[in-house]
Image (cartoon, rainbow, N blue to C red; front, side, top):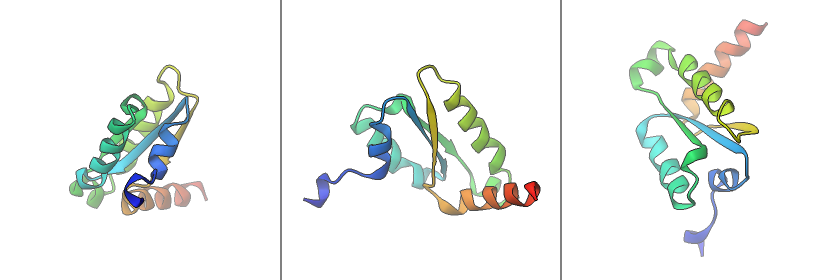
Length: 102
């Protein structure tokens, strides 16, 4: 039954002490929110909503890292996974980070 298949975010959120940070537009994030609510893991889901304007101006990086920091500093969290719910948002940030580290 494909309707009962567990998604990757659900598998991640079922691991004790692991937080999931997801950046993207509301359309990308709503499915993750619903999945986390269904398995009672909203306390370990950290959504980082990025507007099209922020994305266009390259301003998403700061918001993503703030969400990672918030998740990492949450009591009981031992690890943080950044989930690519909207790949274009993460790609732009990773590309900028890689360029500045050269």
